[in-house]
Length: 185
Image (tube, rainbow, N blue to C red; front, side, top):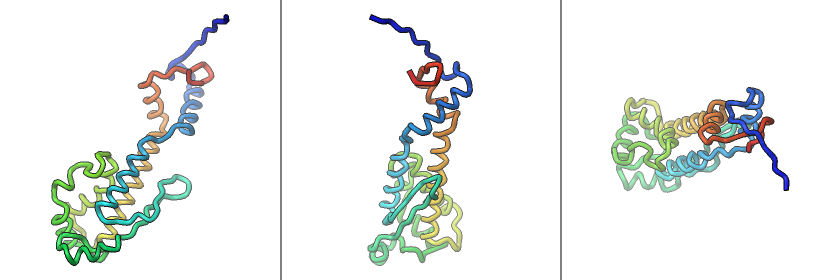
């Protein structure tokens, strides 16, 4: 029988170079677990506003985008329901009134789609528009702005998640221990 003693260190006890090596490894190996919630918000928002998501991507290297169309029955629905929204040709005060009539305060509570902050990222441009309607903003442009805001905040969340300070905070909160060369014990 053989007994070995291993000396372990908390993250703070390691040299800065070793901490940076651990953070780099963490970025490469760790799964951004909030990604599913961001995606759920996107899909629930699209369903709520009768949008057909064609393709989307949030990527640092190849660009980020959300491609969408209004569902085929959206315009027909408008003819039958005075509170529903037309495709993209409605704008200004008319758009403001349609938004107010269709989406009452209950529907527009905080994080109404999934309970995740991604809902608010999508709704912020609509909430801002309702506070201060723009004469020239069409429904299509407003939805496009919602997607741009969602992309921006999703990327900011990923960048925060990958930051040294956030990684350090998570490692310390979980009380992880490391060997002198930076391997997790």
